[in-house]
Length: 595
Image 1 (cartoon, rainbow, N blue to C red):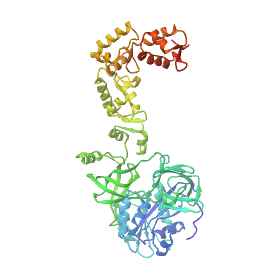
Image 2 (tube, one colour):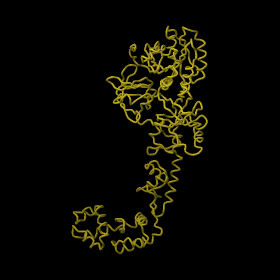
Image 3 (cartoon, helix red, strand yellow):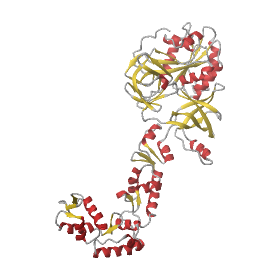
Image 4 (cartoon, one colour):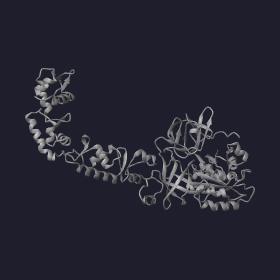
């Protein structure tokens, strides 16, 4: 294999163009003539005179723009390899031989280009030194014009004699000038089309960087693990950074070759979500089990028609997909393209109820493949910002949605939540002090407890002390009012003569009634079944301060005129408040910081 030409000093953007066309129509010969490089990498390819896997070569055009060619195989048996090359490329150099004209794989390659929605191309009619190129040109243009490529410039060339190469370079210059500028400040998704090992460097992967930028030292996602970029190479030359569009080789640190393969993707961390189900719009109705091609990935899928031109694809292997991604379905038995597709939703809802598929088809009818913030948030009710970004959205203020505590919530959902919360609070039993925070979250169906406080505020409710209630409301004692008043009267006469549990039960004061009385500021519970007036601890301190310090439990009990059942939890309560200090197992003293 000849040595590649010296690396090109890249002052202008790089452009990536894939070849397409029937086997043995001169794609590799043409690339070789344009670049001076050998695109067929394997000895078997050169021996057999046909491209089996993807090849790469690059050259500078007359304007100084640089174009890199992804040379794809033309044989029917290698259609999957061809799709791995065309999938990430924004433009195509379509090749038809003048002496053979339009052939079967010309049709299959064009079907793939059309299914993927490639809109930019050039037609090269090769071997024009062997036959009149006019008939082959006319036939090819009829097919290309009816595809996504539309009208394309045409050049008659000969890779063997060099005829037309100058005109083809000019046509390529005009082609790359029409290509849309790449997005640079976006998350990276580099589909891997080749993986190999370099002695002394380790595992290297290659791919077409269609958007974003890569830097040495960057950490990326690869499947379920993270990897670090050890080195980058572009057009045979090491570099610290690569920006789209580019053919790039990435040296990965501490990754074995068998841990990465064609169809995997290097992803910006926390910016993509892999999915095993996508809703798509098809260019042709299909129902079989097929193979989905997106980027360089090829994954078996089951197609579930939804209605009209929409379907749900259930993937055998999850892929990092977003709305707007183009792909195609291939029939592996027939080695042919079954349908093109556009991803409409990479996070679709479940279809469990009768009629759900038809309803979903209706919902997808206006979908364009461009994710819309209001639509996505409204369907979900609420969505975390990081999940929306992983769907390809850049959340920003918009009518119909609001941002609350890291969530985007549809206004309609917020109103429904608010109404549900108010009804739940108003339905709380009179003895309860409103709803606990967790109970309110469950009743409303909030995905995050942090949303409760702003929701309660917006609904005109109070959410203090871990409970949600009407502002200024107090729990109503209802039928327990008389019993609580009776206990209050008893304690006003004998402040530390706490009623026994049977006495409380006789009065109808159980745990819920006592909790309500405490919330209303009527009673104070100590140790669960010891009930005093709220000013009981302060009354006790006045008595204890008059004792000889330090004092014992027995002395305190005697001075307070109460029982051990009351004295123990009362003193522990005073210890906790810092009003008394425990010196050892039997002695206490009044703290200097007493009220």
